[in-house]
Amino acid sequence: MGSRGNVVSRQGRARGRITAAAIVAMVLVGGTAAAASAVGIATMAASNENADSAATASDSLALNSELQPLVSSAGLPTPERVSGADRFDGAVKISQRAFPGQAPVVYVASGENFPDALGAGPAASHEGGPLLLTTSASLPTVVQTEITRLAPSKIVAVGGVNTISPAVFTVLQSLAPTVVRIDGADRFEVSRRIAAYAFASSSKAYVVTGVDFPDALGTGSAAASKDAPVILVNGTAAAVDAPTLTLLQNLGVTQVWIGGGPNSVSTGIESSLDASRPTYRLAGNDRFLGSEVINREAFTENSNYVVLASGAVYPDALSGSALAGALNAPLYLVPSDCVPDGVLSDIRSRSATNVLILGGVNTLGAPVQSLTSCGW
Image 1 (cartoon, rainbow, N blue to C red):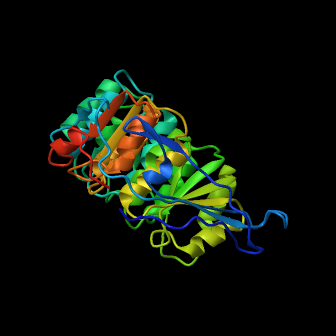
Image 2 (spheres, rainbow, N blue to C red):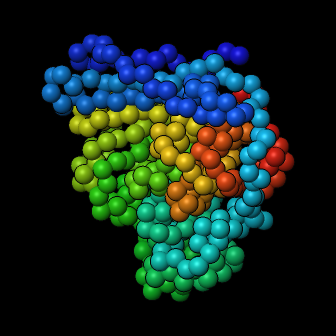
Image 3 (cartoon, rainbow, N blue to C red):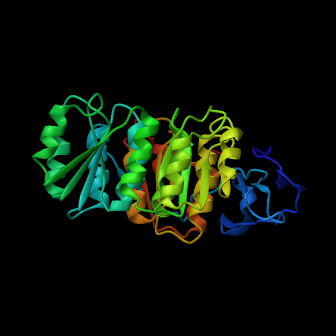
C-alpha cells in the first residue's frame, strides 16, 4: 500500500541543512516486531533561533512508512464502552469512570460548542477533576446530580454569559463553596485565561487552532499527561499573537508543541514561536494519524489504558481528555466503523490491558467495539 506521510528531513532555517538522527520506534504487529514507520507518520519540527550559532535551526522530523494492511485484533483486550443517553450524560459517565469517589474541582463548559472546552479538559486534569458539559440555558439534571456526588470545593465555569447563562451559574453556586467564571472577548482569550488560571507554571505548552476541533481533540490527552496547557490560536494568522507570547513567558514555557499541520497552524505562527523557544510540530495526513503521532510523542512507555473517541464529533473527546489524564492514558481519534492499524499496533505495543471506548454505538459502532481494523 502507498505511503501516507512525508519524507524524513531536518532543515535548518538560518544555517542550512543539518544531519537528521534516525528515529525508529518499535511496535508489535501480530506478535512480530516492526518499525513504527509501518503504522503511521510523525512530523516534529523543532527549532530555537535564539540559541547559539551551532544550534540555531529548525528540525523537521518525520516517521514515514508503507502502511501495513489489516493488523489483527487477536489477543487484544476486550473494550469497555463508556456512554450515556446524550453528550451531557456521556460526560457524566466519563466522570464516574475517572472519579468513582469525590473530586476537589469540577470544570463545566458548553456542550453545544467546542472552543471553551478544548482548553478546559487539560486544566481540569491538572487540578484533579472532571470536565462536565452544560447547555447555555440550563444545567442538565444529570450533571447537577453528578456535581453533588463529586462534592467539589470549587467549580470552574468556562465561558461567558452567552455560553453559560447567569441562571446556570446561579445553580452552580448552590453546588460548591467556590464558583468562578473564566471568560474572555473570544475563544482565544478564554483559552489563555484558562491556562493562566489553572497553571502557575509549565515548561511545556501545546498550541492548536481554535478554528476547528480535530487537532485539539487529539492533543488534549497528551497535554493532560504532560501536565501542560492547551492554548488556542487563530491558526490562519501570519504570526502568533502577542498575548499568547506573553502567556508563554509568564508560565515559563521552554518548549512548545504545535498540534496539526501548516493548514491548521500556519508556518508563520510556527516561525514566530521559534524565535523565543524550541517549537515542535506534530502532524499526520489526517486527524486519525495526527492523533497517533501526538500520542507516540507524549506516551513513550507502556500504558494500562488506551482510550478511543470519535474523530468526527467532539463531545466525548472533550470530557475524555480529563479521563485520559486521570488514567495517564493516550486518547486516539478513530472513525465510526473501524480502528486504524496504527492504533491497534499501539494498543499491542503498549501492553494495554484496558481499552475504553467513549460514546454510544451511533458514534462508534460495533466494529470499533470489536477492534476491527480499518485496513489502513
